[in-house]
Amino acid sequence: MSSVKATKFTGNEKTIILKFGKGKIVVGEGTTAGAKIPSVIFSKCLTTEIGKEAEDEKCDLKNVIVAFEFHKIESVDVVIRQLNNIKKYFKK
Image (cartoon, rainbow, N blue to C red):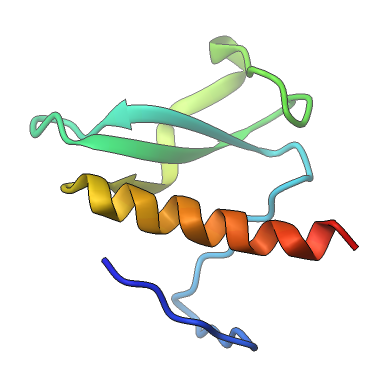
């Protein structure tokens, strides 16, 4: 996995945009079925307080929207680095 510096994002009809900070997405750790590969999963959640642990019974983890499947620890580092990079937009 590598990173790219982009100034503008352009998607298409297949692009999935996860909107964070609205309280409707739950993020968790998991493994893909069968393979047991470590993953970060993103699922819809009816109600959850932003920044808090969600209650399992309020979130349908069977309908995962997106899963980040990691095969190498370096790939985890790339994602963490990019998330840290976008923090600067909130520090203004």
